[in-house]
Structures are given as C-alpha cells and as structure tokens.
Image (cartoon, rainbow over the protein chains, first blue to last red):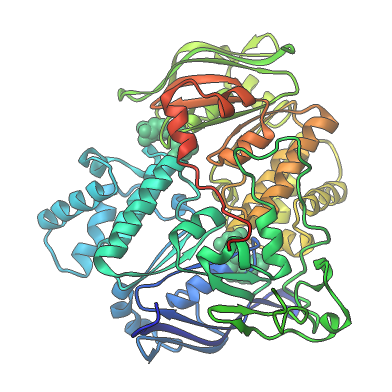
Length: 324
Length: 265
Ligand SMILES: Nc1ncnc2c1ncn2[C@@H]1O[C@H](COP(=O)(O)OP(=O)(O)OP(=O)(O)O)[C@@H](O)[C@H]1O
Ligand SMILES: Nc1ncnc2c1ncn2[C@@H]1O[C@H](COP(=O)(O)OP(=O)(O)OP(=O)(O)O)[C@@H](O)[C@H]1O
Ligand SMILES: [Mg+2]
Ligand SMILES: [Mg+2]
C-alpha cells in the first residue's frame, strides 16, 4: 500500500452535531480527520451509537457536516447543494444497515433495480431489466425475484438486492453500513466474496462499517476504531488481533463470542456506563470505563497520534507507545 | 429433559401458492431453556417463529401441523385468543425491530403505551419501568432515548429499544428474531447476559433466531438448524456445535470467521 497511494477521500476535522429539544446539542461525530486511499477497504468499528453511520452519511452527503471539510477526489463536497449532488451520487453509494427500510412496499424488486439504470444511464425499460437480471445473478438470486414484492423476501435476500442495486452504477466509493449483519454466515461469506471480487475487478474503495471484528480482520486493509464520536485507534487490520492497544479496542476484542470458545466462561461486560454524547466532559471520552485512566485523562482529551508506522492511537498512557 | 413449554409438531407453512417456506418441522422447547434457531438466510426461521404468535407476513398460512403451548394448540386459536396471549404470555422481538416502531411517535410514548396495554399501571410507573429496562441494555441516556423519535437513534439503539419492550412484560416465552444483529460486540455481550439473566431470574423460556453462531453456542441449551424450510438437525448445543452430524451444519460452522488474536512473532 506504499507506492503511489492516491487519496480518494479526505476528512478534515469533521464534526456533526444534532440540535435536540431544549437547546441541547448532541455531538455524533467529533473532529474526525481521516484519509481514505484509492482502492482501500477501510473498516469502521465501535460501540453502537458512536457515530459510524453518521460518518457514512456525511461522506455520502446524505447529512451535512456541521464543521470541517470533506474532499472527494480533491474536491470539497461538504458544502454542495442538492442540485450538485446528483452527479456525485453515481460515484458515492451507501448501503444501509437495515434492508427493510430501503424499499417501498408496493414497488417490485424489478422496478427497484431498474431505477438507477433508467434514471442515470437513461436506459429504456427492457434494457434496464436485462441489466437488473445481471445484477441479481451477481448476488445469486434468480430472475423470478424481479416480480416479487419486498415483503416476500427474507432479510438476507433483501440485503442482496440492495447490494446489487448499489453496484449498478459502478461507484468509485461505496459505504457498506453493516451490510452482512442480516445474513447467515454462509451467505455472508458469499457476499464478502462478491465484494472481494468487485474490489479486485473495479478497485472500488470501500468504507466498511461493521461489528464483526473477525470479518473486518479478514476483509479490510485498515481498521478505524471509534468511541463516542472520536477516532481512538487506526491500524492495519491484520494487526488488529495483536497490536491493538487502545483500552477500548482491547475490550472489543475480549467481547467476541467465539463458536468454540468456553461456554461456561463469564461474559465479559465492559464496566461503567456508556457516556452520553450530549454532555461531553473535557477529558478522554473513554475515561470513565478505562482501567488505565489517570488524572490527565480526566482533564485533557488525547489527540490521535502516530505511535508507529501505520498505527495511530489517541491515549495519554500509550502516547509514546512503550509497547514492546 | 424438562417439561416442554412449546412443542412444534410437523409444521408446514406456505405463502400463497408458492413453495413451502417451512416444511414438516418438529422440535420442542423445554421449560426455562434457551433454544437457538440458526440456518440459511431465507430458510424460514422468521416465518416459523412468527407463526407461533400468529403474525406471519401477508399470505402466510399454516397448512398443517400443531403448535402446542401450555397444553393448548395455538394453531386453533382465534385472533382474539391469540391477541390475549401475545404480549402477556409470549412476547416477540422482531428481526427488523426498529421498523416496528412508529416513526411519527416518540419512543417514550410508544413504550409507555405498550406497557399499559398489558399492565394496569400508571403512566409514571410505566415510564419508570421503561427507563429502567433501557438502562439495563446500556442505553444510559434513557431520558434522551425516551424523548427521541426513532430516526434520531442509531440502528443498534433502535434494536435495543425493541428488545427492552419485549423484555419488560416478563413473558413466559420470549421469541427473539435476530436480537443482536445490529449491536457491537461489547453491547451484544451485555444483551446476551441480560437474556441469560432473564431466564435465570424469571424463568423465562427463550426461543431465538440468530446468525451469530458464537452467540448461539454461548447462550443456547439446544440448537435447531434449518435449511430451505426444513429442519436439518436439532439437539443439545454441545452436540450440534462440537459434533455436527449434518453436512450443512458443518458447512455453516466452517463459514464462521474466527477472530485471530495473540502475538505474532
Ligand atoms: N437525526 C438525528 N437526530 C438526533 N440525534 C441523532 C440523529 N441521528 C443520529 N443521532 C445520534 O447520533 C449518535 C450516533 O448515531 P449513529 O447512527 O451514527 O451511530 P452508529 O455508530 O451507527 O451506531 P449503531 O452501531 O448502533 O448503528 C447516536 O447517539 C444517535 O442517537
Ligand atoms: N409474505 C411472503 N410472501 C411470499 N413469500 C415469502 C413471504 N415472506 C417470506 N417469504 C419467503 O419465505 C422464505 C422464508 O422466509 P423467512 O423470512 O422466514 O426466512 P429467514 O430464515 O428468516 O431468513 P433471514 O435469515 O434472511 O431473515 C423466503 O424464501 C422468503 O422469500
Ligand atoms: Mg449505524
Ligand atoms: Mg428472518
């Protein structure tokens, strides 16, 4: 990944706040800076509610940033107006967590798949239908699905249709938000193989949001760990299992249920309460739940710093990375 | 084996006149046990679990078979009788839990309504109960969650709201369709512990569908494996996970990505 790495997406101190009732502010994403390289598969993992989907929506311009800038292929896309987004949509696709919400109940799968071909590629209905068949084949569903309604499909089948549609326009960046969580492991494997194939053939960049650490480890090039809207660690994914050092990343690794693990073992539950994204303190977001916390952690937010090649970490205690 | 709380006998379900979605499936769920259904996507897991409380999606009908719950065959129940059982004795957490929430109403309102449709308690008491349950599922911002509309919550937060709603009724049988699919591993661990506690403390019997073989292996006493509408094998968890007999079960287990941890070099 060293030579001629082109940055396809650059985030500069990106924040997203939501205004709630009674003038309260919720910070969903907090000053995130990140480079995504062309052709890279970058994973985002982290606690439920830590801002992963929000980040995905910011990157694909579904939500507007509150602060900071996002550059896609060198162009600032953080302030685009609706009209200007249309073109970008072809290049930036997002697949959501929940396939059930994507469909309108009365639209047949065929019509759903035809849409991008008709709207963007200006194809006529018949050609679009042929293309749709091809897309369905790619996700291993036969053409009888074209005439089905969404409620007639299982969760996994729906998600495959969603993936098929996202791939239709050959985007250069795709955000996959929990795309496999509704799928059984063998279909998950097929989907990952499909995504791998697409990646090899098209070099599509993938921002892959997932809860499945093992999957991330095998599918992605780098992993970003988020906690409460902040990036706390970035590393190569094949090093996740042994050089991850942020105390939160450690907790994540310890919480995985392994099939052949010890079934009598006490469940590892992270102590303390997840903090609220509304009333942030000045210190480290993880301080209240961290076994290593010291006074400095209470007072000052640690910056994300390089601790060695390809490894960034935001932790006062590990700053100098005295990791052996 | 303990007494059976639920017994599925030769159940066959079909949508309209298409191929059967569930075909001649039989197994039982012992009192106070946790049973996990795993298997292929589209194999009829949701169809099966929903049929127990008579909530199949449109066009689904039970063609033959019996569903015995506490000595009663639920297949013969009228809508009215079913309605009474739902929520009181049996509750269900749906696969797409979040989308069962009404997008136009605040979480708090929906939660309180749900509780009060089953329990005769005041709004304030219901609200307290709701908040307590949310907190147990790591939604410490419970007040904010109660005041939010569903779109203001993350996927995993909506899923936990749905779980909380399913759990507050202290049902005798909890049906949970993919309850942890949208959760990160630390919160998943908390939810799994919560379910184990529900069984241990209240004797709740749990039938859950999950794609997470690790969760099934940890939580379940018995595992049911399904493929293309049929039950391929079922039995004690140890037996299915450690000594699977059917090739499909083996294939399923081998497809599980395992986390590689530990030092290298
Ligand atoms: N439209 C909104 N209005 C108010 N708050 C919001 C809105 N959208 C998201 N949030 C809040 O922002 C935070 C981050 O949400 P987000 O969906 O990005 O989390 P996530 O990391 O994707 O979680 P999950 O893993 O559960 O999907 C949450 O606390 C959520 O409640
Ligand atoms: N309302 C319906 N009309 C027609 N067919 C349906 C309907 N609902 C489900 N099906 C079909 O029945 C089969 C079983 O679906 P079901 O949702 O029970 O599967 P599942 O095992 O829960 O899958 P997943 O793991 O993907 O959620 C699928 O092939 C699906 O397409
Ligand atoms: Mg999300
Ligand atoms: Mg299902």
